[in-house]
Image 1: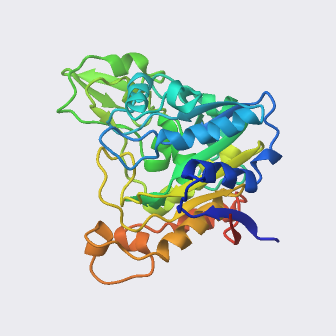
Image 2 (image 1 turned 30 degrees about the horizontal axis):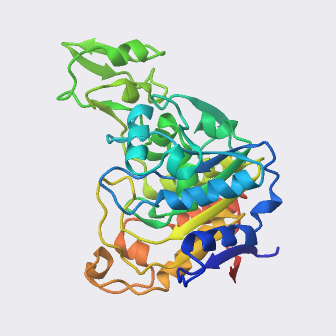
Length: 368
């Protein structure tokens, strides 16, 4: 089998050629024009950044992608799904406010912003996972599955559960509805924090399976009846209901790969990753630490597995930056991401993604 092609450009910019122009050139060299965009609804999956975090991708990059899609006849929109954790992106209204606050709006990007899984994270499509070992039917944001073409634009960075967050995490975890995210993160069902529960009964009313009861003005969930849909998490206004967060990191990575396959399977897809501002943790944090390595460059490929592999190889070949989280870790290692987060192993995601046919780790790096 021929190696997958991954295209790369560095971040050097001289008069007459800026970084945005280099990104456009990279996308074209990588073959994005091979996709038939004519009249096609095109989802551009991105992470808008939790407010307070400043490492997320600038909206200028998203505008380049949207403009290229429009020039090829497509109808692009930027999208992400609501979060499972408590923050400012847990429902569509707050999520849109966060996106606008961080500069993502139709005026700056040239296209609309849609939250993929609706107002409360419950607008989802049930998508069969071809060859899935852990997930037979993924729960994906409906707007994302309604798109004709799928593009991921990822900020490559460290991650405290998966080692790093790149294309596969942006696709798999990012496109999961609230119930989908819970399935990836948790082996069990939602739980009630009794101290926060005020007994309002909102969760009881939304539960379609009569799994929630109120006793002494405190909610409780019967896990024998609960199907893990996550609707109670979205409806609780007091953050009293949450996921169990009890899945192992390796299984989380494998589920994430299977979700990513569900998202792209059977339709045109293209992937871009920017290895810049590589903070040790996810952009879901409401803060970002200093980068752990120098900025590397921009990558593009039709193969998200090869893309992640190329990004992590380049990142691991770079030196640790002084006074960063990585530099503060004891000892030395040639794997920056496992060294920064010793309880993680990003290889479990890429190995499983290759096994189920999402892509391959072998790649040819072509510098543009």
